[in-house]
Length: 489
Image (tube, rainbow, N blue to C red; front, top):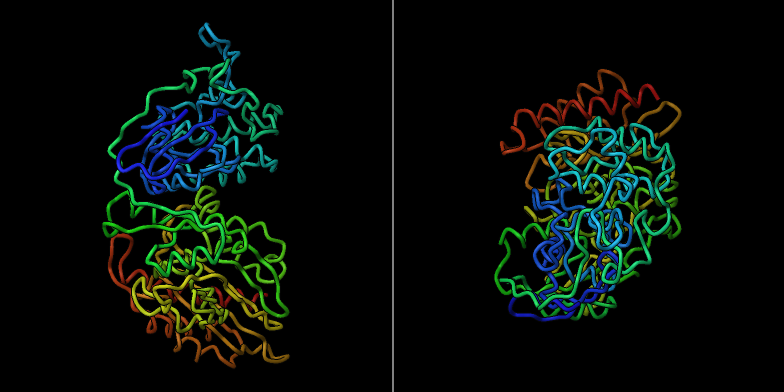
């Protein structure tokens, strides 16, 4: 199938959708969600928030759960997409019956978990992704697996029951992403509730998305960046800005997704090196991270939910330079070094000098952040706290990282670093609090004095997420809690 979407049509992208080969001619930054719904007519994938927060647009990309509103078409090129329409199977020429349902669909019906229909397709696919992963179907694990999927009807209990029931009955096929595979939906068989994807005349859609070029090597990407092209990686912020028209007209984008060399995680002597394209899921699953700097996995688990963690990158979080960026206080508290590269060469920037203003960094216009180097001094401990509206999918109101070493047998702290996010235009160190803690032995009195000092260090504002007063009070309280916890250890 060839579908032409809008004008100007720039590139032909070839992907597999529900087993069928599809060619879409469109700008590379066109959302996969729009390709599925508008260009291919697969309206089982819903649009809710358009920001990667509700999960209504969830699909499986090569078996990985993603929000299709955050995936540019260029990053689906050459890959396999599965939507809710691929579930279940009925013979051609007859109406589907309950026997044709996918087992998880059947479990949803039996448990009474089917609500209004807006959120259920994404919920079902999130359930499939979870069950295919082989994790034990505990209540907590299922809740985490669907944390990126909001149910407007608030039917979570029945949804959790349905997923647990499907897992307990061993109903889910583990191969091929848990979905039907091997049958081309263009040629026989059809989904239980939807017609098959079929050839059609080219679809013309008003499509004004910017151009995108796929870089197949770092050198190729650097050349395009030097020529004014803007990098795009996980797209968890940039795709939202594109959809809302918040970017400058005429911008061109270079897709970094295919540069595998930037995804590595390894130790280089006493330094942990994390590639800029490593995702939060990579951090959570990396045995190297678990052994060398486990706080990174803890931070990654607090970012969004599975769909965002599967897409968002370390480099994107840092280079985006949002003061609410969850990784940024850890970068500051560990004295990380940020490796930048351009066609002119490579340089290393200390984290303390990297964030120069609100969403501004010390990167030159032609530079890419390619890696983060975390020093691993002997005996260092690092603690992290995030305060948001809820446990998952929350932008931080306050985020804190603290690191220290025990100076001697007395337990006194040395080399103390206290770093905050969401309390100033940039992520900041808290020098007053550090001075109180440096050389001191943790005690309740010390915890109180450090908290008071931290409240003097931060510079919060009132905004739609919180008030300055609340942020200041919380900044002190969570530092106090970290110091008190250190006494108990």
